[in-house]
Length: 231
Length: 382
Ligand SMILES: Nc1ncnc2c1ncn2[C@@H]1O[C@H](COP(=O)(O)OP(=O)(O)OP(=O)(O)O)[C@@H](O)[C@H]1O
Ligand SMILES: [Mg+2]
Image (tube, rainbow over all chains, first blue to last red; front, side, top):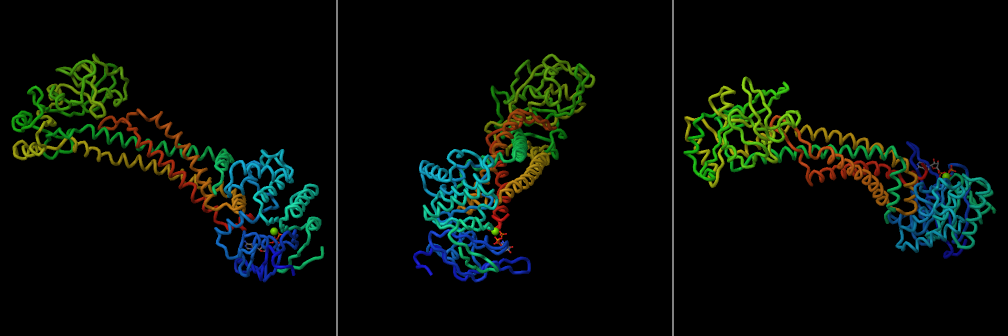
């Protein structure tokens, strides 16, 4: 077990249940998990095993039925919805399988969105957006709309949007699931760079063993429990 | 912590059909609301301007609500003049005007028949109705008739059909149009005035319809007292103002109908708007969820949706108001009591603006709330 100071996320007997009609589904059952700061963690598991559910809990999109989740000392399982929204804005960047860019906003404007939640001057925002887009290699596509970009480019814009406000935690749900090999490799390389050079903690759900290989370790989720695999 | 305004603006253009629908709907509603308001205002203003608080109408007992049905003895005018004090009397000439109101059938030189109220008057009518001015020609003497400047509109004929010199058939008699008069903002403007004695002969009556008395420092109660004391004359006195006010209540069903029509169309527009906006917002559920994941509050998204809807409805309001001003502003509506010029004013514009704003709010808030309902993980999954 690592030293307490190095732990960014600590889950203690986390259970998540959903009502499905009469039945109770329990995708996560008294699960314990520590994620050290700076970790690049891949999560695999069969469909329906609760990967997205766990990712949502770690990133404050959803809250557990029971158990506790602390991120950087904040007990996010106990935050109000409003406080949770404010927490997400500062602490987490999201990357989705289908990019989820806002179609009516340009790449620049999409990346700028998280910064609008901060008290920044227009110029400061522009500098940060330009830096983020240049990091993902899309400086020349700044004023393009999502429909004018390829899938791989859209996902890079999404990554720029996730990191522009400099959150310590990035979560990605099958970020390469909809991309060809080449684009997928570019995305994975980008995530590795962010982990290595910026010390981001990254939790990535994937079905692709090759994608998982880009991470520093892989966890398997099965029947509501985690099994660590040798990486 | 609001979403950029440009997000709301660009969302407008996501679906042009929807934009056209909501624009057209709100323009139509605003147009109708302004039309209904202007009609009601026009009727109210015209009728209230038509009755002076200084004028008393002396009518036959039991006919206080209809000058047309009322019968007043011929001597009533003379007796009133002698008995009531405080009558307006410029240059010693007392403002007491006996009048006959008669529904007449007139023939134009080309054979067209027109039917409407004709008022038989003496020159005293100009004392009791100082708002009347002869614009063209002269006041009608025997064998003559004079037309209000809106009379032609009311009869649905050309302005050129009623010009001084025109000969009008009235039963066996021929009347020459002696002039055109104005009486701004009152129902008198759509009337025909002719010589009292002529009308008495032609209408074959021995009585007049009413005696109009204009008071100076006199008290309306004195006139009423006079009619009550002279039981033999069987008279009743009302202020001209209350007479026309009662006439206005007679038109309440017309007013109710215009408002009901406007309200029904508005309801249909709101319903249609609710549906189209619901579909529009529902197609953005995942995008809304993403914005929430990033950290935007539901309120921020709700506000953006309201902005989007208000922009459409207010632009529709502009179009509707413009159409109303262009198409309705100087329109005159004809009812049996006379011609009513549609009363456009700041309140009409305000009514339209209010309707447009409400439409934008009522049409967008329920669908927006419904689309913000699903939980965040659920919405992201959709
Ligand atoms: N909002 C919900 N209501 C009811 N059941 C849910 C809900 N969200 C998830 N579940 C159920 O929880 C279980 C885990 O779902 P989850 O989406 O976490 O799986 P996953 O591992 O991400 O699957 P996949 O690989 O297909 O994305 C599934 O059985 C799913 O049906
Ligand atoms: Mg999933």
